[in-house]
Image (cartoon, rainbow, N blue to C red; front, top):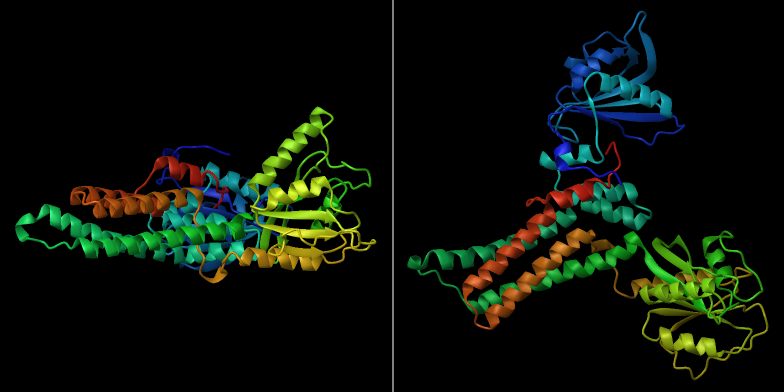
Length: 466
């Protein structure tokens, strides 16, 4: 990760960067932003039709060539130049985008010519940072820009697009306005006693309870949305040679893990991400429960236990062609406190498994043959239904980043504490102080109250050119 300080984002500079991934491709884009954009472009761009690019209208497209000065001048590339004048641009500055041929060499040559004209190479996320500081977007939307780029599923993309359109901002602003109204009442009560401002503690408690519920609902929705964005942590567990690696490969639709009839083939935890009906599943193939005979096996079993404990969903795999063993019963006890799906594998063989009277009525059960690929769709459906049975509804979800969730949690805690103090008959001064703290927390979430450390951490995760 490229670390830098906010002071490196000098807003007086005209900046440029390759905005597309440098590769062998049909097109590549270089973005330019700053007050000198048009004058610099006029020195390097030769339009096909004679014109002064500095006087061209905003939102116009111009065909021509990037030319390197010399005797004679050398054409670097044939390009299309897009013009966006301030304040109606991504950064609210003069912005130019050069669409050139793709390829590392040609894009770097154009960028090099711009840098020689006094343009500075943009830092990660610097264009979006300028959009933030100019007021075009807030911090929530700035992070949504990154989330759109990094989205790995349709649902994650939909969440990010809604954040970018301002849905989360609107809900946070509503919460903040409600909080601000209550805070203003306590401020007036404390600062203007001569006006005999009335403050009903009963009404105040009801309003604070509503605020607490509001913030709690946002936090709950975000934690549910995290599954759609970051993935559900799912471990395939079972005794040795039950077919865990075969099922893992079957779900991946490729031979990611070497399989064998020899027990204990998997000696490590193997992780992959797959898409189950729009849900990113971070799936782990774990070592079977065998007696550790060496250091490598002991380490594998230790990692298996860690993955097991941290998983959101357990796929408990049993061999339908064998009776339940001591290892199966051991795992059954372990998964009673976890969300689990029981998968009975090897249904293509003669069945010897009996699961009656095991107290598993509430557990979802799927029968399949991982080797033959039979029943895999049933397992995918069971995973989907298990996730959505937890109450996840895509339509209204919002997603908070880790730091956003932290600040909303702090605001919620301060509101709860204010409510408790009010119920205990504590002075209004203390309630007022806690409400002010909660307002500051929400301000940090939206970016109104700036924290350099947070901003540096966020924007260092952006790609250069965005």
